[in-house]
Image (cartoon, rainbow, N blue to C red; front, side):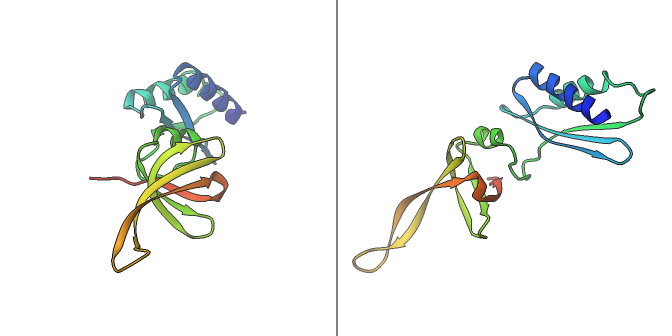
Length: 154
């Protein structure tokens, strides 16, 4: 019963705060509820407070005791939700594919079932010695992605 009520309250919260969306929701044995959120324009502390209050103030602790933690998705966490990919267009991603290969490139496009990465690569010249820089692009199916993370630049 608690799970369904929390899920319904989160739906209401995300309708009210339209730029926010759910990344992960977990329940542990002793009613420890963990909510991980993200937003199209990022997540502020106030966003976490707003979602927390929306859930917590509509649950009755007399009925069922619980603990609630609402947090933003970390910068080093893998992308899970397609909406996370969309908000990161224009940023570099490290993508590990199901076949074990890895690609690092600029996320240039997100479509219904695919993403497009582009990068520059040095390849041997067709004639003569040396290498030349060429532009590469690959369209990758979401099904082929094992894990994708935003590459943080300092």
